[in-house]
Image: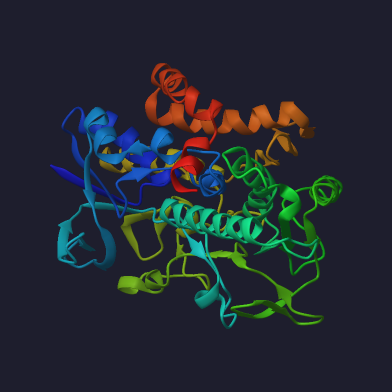
Length: 429
C-alpha cells in the first residue's frame, strides 16, 4: 500500500491529512500518516488570542489522534529532524528523545515557520516569540505572572503615573498589531477577576516597526486608520524604528533612546526552521524555505511536496506566495489534487496564489480589505469586518470537522467565549 507522510499539522497539513484520509485512507488506497510535535491543532492566526486568554485552547483545540480516527489517517507525535531521500525515510524524535525512522512513498513537508530575528543580538535571549500554541501559552503565563506581581506592588505601595507595565512588540504585521490590541482588554479582565486596581491605564504598550508604516499588506489609508485606532487606545506605534539589539531592559534602536520594556515580544518576520536549509540536498531559499515547482513538488525530488509557510512557491508576479494561512489552505487543496493525480498517472495542476484580502482584528472591531475576483477590493470595517474575520476561522474548522460538527463545536464552546478567560485568571492570577 502507498505510504503518504505529512509532516506538520498546521492549517495546510491537517486539512491535507483530513482530505487524503477521507479519499484514500478510507478506501485503503493509501496509508496516510500525519506527524507533528504537538498532540493538537490550534489555528495559527489566532495564537495572539491564546496568548491573551480570549481563546481557550482546551475548548478550541482539534486533537490529532481523534481527527485521524474519524478521518482515516494515522497520527504519530514526534519532531522532524532529518530526511533520507535515497531510502525514502523521515527521521523523527519522539517524546523519549529516541530517533524513529518512518518510511514513505510520497512525502509532504508542511512544518510552517518560525520567527526571524534577522540575527539581531540579544533577541533570542530576551524576547518572547509567538510561533506555536506552546509559545502562546508561555506568553500568557508570563503576562499573568507580571500582572500579578504588579498587583502586589500596588497593594503595598502608592503608585505614580510612571508606574506602568511596559510591553514592547517588534513587528507591525498582523500578529503584532492584533496582539497589541488585545492587551488592554486582557488587563481590564484581569482587574474584573478580583484585581480591581488593575486597569488598562497601567499598561504602556509599544509596536515597533522598521518601515514607514505598519501592516504593509493593507492599503495605506486602511493601515493609517488602524494606526489611529491603536493610538486612541493608548498604544504607541513607532515606525521607521530599526532595532539593533535587545537587552534585559529593552530594545535599542538605530537612532534614539532605548525603548524600555518589562516584557519584550518579537513578531517581525518569519523563516522556515533552520534545519530545512539544504536538507537532504533539496533546494532552499535564503529564508530556509524549500523551493517548489508550480506543482508544489520540490525542484529536486518529485516524491516530495511542500506546502504552507515552509514552501517557496514563485508566482507569475515575480514574488513568492506569502506565509499566510490562506496561502497554506490554497496549497493544501492543490497538493491534495496533485497527489491523487500522481497516483492515477494524470496531469498535475499548477498552484497559483489568489489574494482574497486581509482583515485585522482589533478586539471588538476589525478593519481590512476583501478582494473579489473580477470586482477589485472592498474595504470593510467595524462589526461587519469582525464577523468576516470570525467566519474565516469557522470556515477553517468546517473544512476539518464538517459543517454539522462545527456548529456543535461552536455551541459547546459558547460558555467559554461568554465568560472569556475569567476562569484562566481566577485559577492562575
